[in-house]
Amino acid sequence: MGSTIYEQVKERMIRYAKVDTQSQPYSGHWPTTDKQINLARMLKDEMDSIGVSDVYLDDERCVVYGRIPSNINNDKAQAIGFIAHMDTAPDASGENVKPWVLDNYDGGDITLNKELGIVMKAADYANLQQYIGQDLILTDGTTLLGGDDKASISAIMTMAQYICEHPEFKHGDISLAFTPDEEVGGLARDLDLERFGAKLAYTLDGDHLGWYEDETFYASEAIFEFVGRSVHTGTAKGIMINAVDMAGELMAMLPSNEKPQYTSGVEGFFHLISCQADCEHSKIRLIIRDFDHDNFIKRQELLKEIADKIGSKYGQDRVKLTINHQYSNMKEVLEKTPFLTDYLKKAIEEAGLTPVCEPFRGGTDGAALSFRGLPCPNLSAGYENAHGRFEYVPIQSMEKNVEILLNICKRFVD
Image (cartoon, rainbow, N blue to C red; front, side):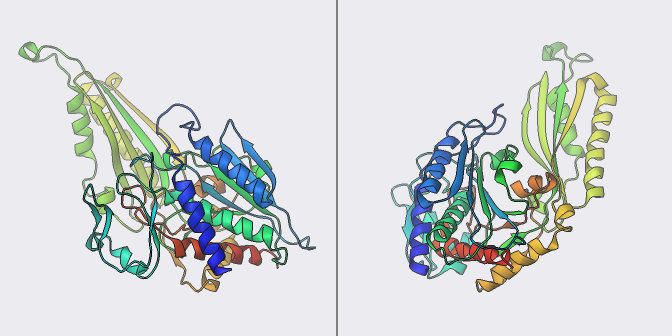
């Protein structure tokens, strides 16, 4: 199995990486970019060709479905699903990606682009040392790679091909789905649970091979809008109200040490995403994150208090605060189905790895799906340095993830 799986995940990752599927925040429509459908169509055709059943592409919502029917006579076997997202992050260019393979990495610096002098320095990326002797898929240093989450898609599709080609591998019903816009908060919003079929599933998304997550943040977005009054600076006294000042006062009132760059583990934070400001109008976007529900609520209340203080100074009609809930801590749901996490840990151990679980300082499609009635722990895809020009995917990590997925499928036969 080894060499075949290796070649298949390698070929798939390179082929998928070349398809631009970058999503776009605040585009105003879903999917946020039309180009994501190109990969969706590729995956539909590929599932048809390898023998997956009930393959369906929802062109309007850009969601691809497939199913591998059970080959056992066991009414007690539970259907299981696997889900990954097709889009890549808007943090770095996803256009004209040029993936290449560095065989047998030696632990030193990696020249990504000789002409442009782009080098990934081993001293800057400590995780590289874990992959000495392995084969890395990289970019030319001008784009991201898209291992987030195409490494997951590569593993799922290779697992599907293996099962379709090996009828001796016993399994229950297996559902597959590939979704858009995870990177910009889509959170599998258009996944049709009835069409998907399985009542239990795993998402694949995240770095570090052998890691998994069953806990995420509680998350909201806050939007402050301030309305000022402009007038010539020479006659501004007692008349001008500067919306830039109002934005600055907001930022000064936020806890200075509760930001992503100063927090870790289960510590929450406020994060300023963007600020557009001039004298007459300013708009600030923040995200609120915390693992503890009570603290999460307190963070939202603090923003309301800040809005009231600024409103008291400049006029309440000049301050508008909107808070939009994004997702909740999936641990609330997964605590009720502990066997899902137990199966995942055992599947990782059976692949010869030590499972590592840490509260996920982000969100997954599974966080939202869990609260829609589809419990979804998350298995890492094994990519590294996601969302940037120095992203890479060890081929052996994808190969190992195929083994983990097959181990999960075996668990649901008993």
